[in-house]
Image 1 (cartoon, rainbow, N blue to C red):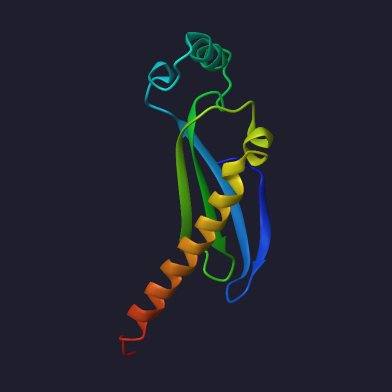
Image 2 (cartoon, rainbow, N blue to C red):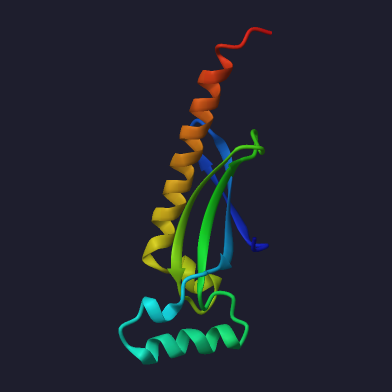
Length: 119
């Protein structure tokens, strides 16, 4: 997980923290690019130690008032210069919205389950 995160206010959830986690992509970049030069560019980035050169990304949303529950969205076969490059891409905003929607769904599911419990 990167150290960077941001907080957003979400109606019904309150303050939600958004985190980005990256993991090494297991698939070969050669399988994703038609142009060998593109594959070579990615492989060179990997060899230089750029973890963003070929990875899969998880955008995670956590409500501060329920920190043990998370919503998330993932995307594989990613190649970026760095985290800022990823955040600027078209996918990031959609992934953030999906992570928040997933968090809302998960919290609603848990709330429904808890409503059947008598204490």
